[in-house]
Image (cartoon, rainbow, N blue to C red; front, side, top):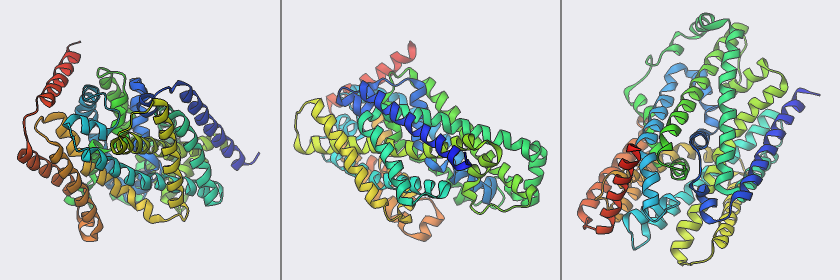
Length: 495
């Protein structure tokens, strides 16, 4: 059997496993809360790893190692910012959001939470939030599908469109039938695969490059600056990289996991698991790049595409079948993000736009059917956008992260910790934050000087506070829910 056949066999086994998990989740899905939020039944390990896998995408195994391979440790500031941001997200958002979404009329989506929390009788906030999620995630999903097509093209020489359809078909199947549970369970497995791959490759690679001292020496011979976090860095460059961490507070496909965990008490254990997974995975990705620099220096070879350093080392170090599992880790990173975004987009369409506009009161079976149709429609639209392999779609990922972080991040934090935020303040902040991020990111000189999430986040925060103070009117129901949430959280801590 050829090397490619061994690797394809590993990919095939992985994909079949994902479909089996999707079928299992389908059997456990009986109502809308199950389909959209897994019945709020996730354990801490599944919550933590599924959130991590949904977050990282192919950047963890290709983008980050490639950046470190070319620029050295100065490129690790983004990883530092993301780790700090993720930790704070688990610490200050997860427990309160889990409790508040239950207190606020058992909200199962971010827009429905904002609507219920702020008692928005106009429904404008819910609809606007749903539309923002729908638009951004359709392109976000499309960029993931492009990555899937490119993966099969570069790894196996498949036609780009064949790779696109294979990746999309498997993700659509388990997401459409199994809903949130399928997405979470598959993300958990995918998170494990990514983690193990990122730990194994640099450890075995160190034996190949002669251990820590020889590896470090080889890197210094290429460029001493590669081992420095500060040489060549600028203040605004470091701020822009670290500021990626701000985005976590407003990413719907990540924070929805906090709403799905079985209890507030388990968020603490989930935080430890999630941050441990993230730290070791990022450390593994950075180490893989450094080992790659040393290996190619020692062999006198040149790596054509730095972003393939993880793949290249996997193929050098292991049997083709094991190398295939390494490739499956990259596919796992791509697919986990696509599926998470699809289910959030589906929920935005059905729960936040359809229900708010048509005000229907149909059965759960009807809404679950609509949710599945929404997954299919959004997927087909994303495939159509990805068909021409338009690289501009991939560029949107950075902007979408900033857009979500700027639109939702400050609003989520204010609704959790400030009782006086109003529906008009939230709506004004959300819109101005998204517009600021878009305009700033569209002007090249501004974008190159400072990542657009910094001004976008600040503008959203300031506008939301000012407009809320101008429009605030005491509301007994809001105050009671706020106090109830605080009391229940204090009670949970005492247990």
